[in-house]
Length: 416
Ligand code: UTP
Image 1 (cartoon, rainbow, N blue to C red):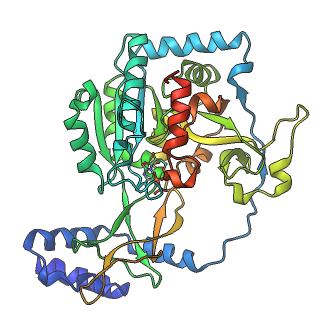
Image 2 (cartoon, rainbow, N blue to C red):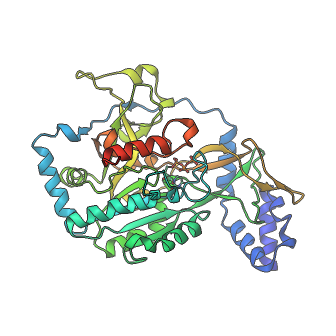
């Protein structure tokens, strides 16, 4: 242990992070061990380079951005049934699994607990998790299968998420048989001087590494292996906060299989050319999603010969992958994006600091940054009112909030 401590002190000195051991002597033995373990797992070179990135002006984008082609689910004509039959067959054969990403912090919603446990105010008072579970189970029934459900949590919310599921008897699922939990990766948070923060528990202040962490953790945590054992070939990955997410879509699956692509994504058309959403495109000839802030007004407004926006297909975090694609994406590091957030921490004198404005950098990978790993993918435009009811903000924001999601949900399911 002393030896380890000596080595760790040397590393911390090299990277000017010696303050991480300020509270070490006051910790009990288990926490001392844990802190040293956490420190030894930090990639200090990565943290240094991420900090340097926060100080740099954003680079001028030199990528060549071009439109991506897409199919409209409701303009497929005869092909609709054709794709649907292919997809239905694969679902009946047990080839589909669903992943729900529930590792986010849900800071905008401000709910005290994992976002999936949130009750959007339906008469049934069902949580987001239960609404998703109802949907997956009823779809499974249609095809005579139980669709395996994989839930990604973070270290921060894993315990409360699992306790919630246990309390609700896993909504009829069986743990480690057809419902599985896995924990996504994390990165330390740093202050504006590049110093890694210590959290209230005296350990490193870690934050989930973004939804882009899903590929690596699916592989590392043995989930892709588990899927293969279950005979799964296709995996729908979606967020926990869209109560209308349609995870079981035979048309989408049929297109992926028929067109022999390893990724198939759903889009909804932008509400207006300047809606603040990421849109599907090609970046240097490869599939990608570009943020609204990265395209010019001219590009945002450009239309094709039919009057459709060239960059109008919004990414709604509804994507289908082959297991091979997930494994490929999980083996390549994704770029990290920086977010400036409020984070409680223990200062160098051992006092708890509760900031009232952002004070710390958090680093997140985005799921769509991996799209360029594949040569081609299919984009399927679906109807917003059928598939997209996000719960992002508190009701006071008036958009993408429980109230708007509840109204959309009720309308779709014909509830009064
Ligand atoms: P958002 O990007 O909307 O983030 O996540 P969020 O954490 O829910 O909310 P804010 O930004 O803190 O207010 C979209 C989806 O990706 C998941 C979320 O749980 C949500 O389902 N996600 C996000 C993760 O699973 N892990 C992450 O690290 C980030």
